[in-house]
Image (cartoon, rainbow, N blue to C red; front, side):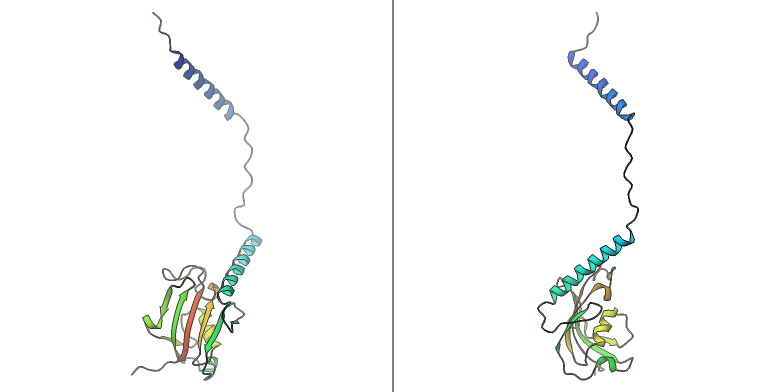
Length: 187
């Protein structure tokens, strides 16, 4: 007696044979070459990207300071406003090595505080010799003794592309509120 396959098994076998032949034929076709991919962005691409990023940061800083009354913009993009000034002489004319006292609040645009004098005490700042970023030196050098001011420091003049993890994220704009005075020894 001869065994005959059921019709469903014959159908599956035929389908398998058809798929195998289509796969074999597809493997023998010529493939089109992949398009040439750039391995790195060009100098012009990088310049355009950084120009666009700088414009976006400048727009953000401008919008944040838009409601300030007497905004001063430095050549490096720092925006500051003097809120109160007893005009006791420019900080820039003090002898190098003078220790200043900053009643300060340094923060981020989202409202987070990095450091404040209420939490950490006043910041003793030796004129011309500190590890604070250049933007802080710039606004303090432009101030008068006793000034109270607020400022927005762009990342390029603060902690830059890397930030200062975990407190300061990459490319952070720093908000500053401070009063500048000569340090007096506590009694």
